[in-house]
Length: 370
Ligand SMILES: Cc1ncc(COP(=O)(O)O)c(C=O)c1O
Image 1 (cartoon, rainbow, N blue to C red):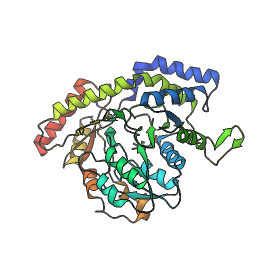
Image 2 (cartoon, rainbow, N blue to C red):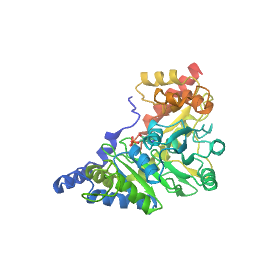
Image 3 (tube, helix red, strand yellow):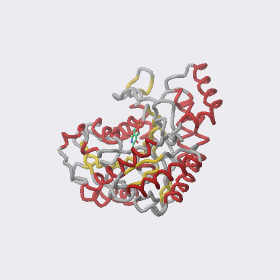
Image 4 (cartoon, rainbow, N blue to C red):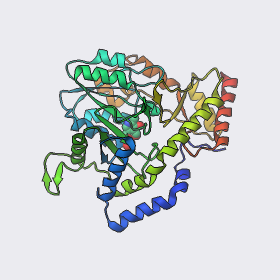
């Protein structure tokens, strides 16, 4: 049985008519660059998040970069973030001209460790950039209290966490700005690249929108220097067609995660993901941990099961960041997790028999090889 890591075609088949109509609407009105679809999506996504304002961007990477810029982060500043994330989180900091300061993660959630954040704050620190990894919220209460004490901005990387909550509050609305990716495989995915910044302060969203559109306030009036990082009309229309389904998809992810919890319970070699008290995960990824991860990955692949590793190396050990002077051993929790994590196929449309096959195969691997 083939079990892909994600199945975008299965989702498309459930909403093909709406998506086709959305695409036709944009083509017929030729509103390709920003326009009414982008404006409507910004309103609708802000409402879905319970945020006062939203600015669409060309990608999640642009959302992070522009949120930092809108908050005035730049040369001479330092931003604290996690090394256990996708490189875009750190790239956004460098793109602003600020310095990346990695801080190790917590062993359970694999999100940034607030105690170590507290120790890392110095006179250059201007912001904390936590990631809600795999869809599980970072420890926001602690991070926000550190930020308040030291007058730091908090920019949430919610690229993987549409629909996650902390004490009932959606992630992205907790810090100064929340950044989302609509990369096709995300909980809400476009048919190309797209992203968004939400904020409780409409002035921040306004600044992001301006920066993303060459700093314009009118067609040829450029208030500031920006760049081209706009959301395009086709992606906005497609996202609008999908948004009404998002709550149902997140519920389905939650239900499928529970199925894995039951099917995989009792296998001693495994550590299963868990939701922390007060947290609701968006279950973007279902990540188990085990010692013989690479062998397990190969075993599953041989049976037609695609599993993934998010991510195989923490950022401080990536060649792109050798200039920062970090060494192996600097962030032991992130390094140890990188060797043991395995993302199992999880998407709203995954079938019961596919999950059963994944779980049986892992059980067989654990019995054979421990
Ligand atoms: C944690 C995280 N941050 C940022 C990004 C960047 O988003 P995008 O690919 O839309 O630029 C991604 C996804 O790709 C991500 O997973």
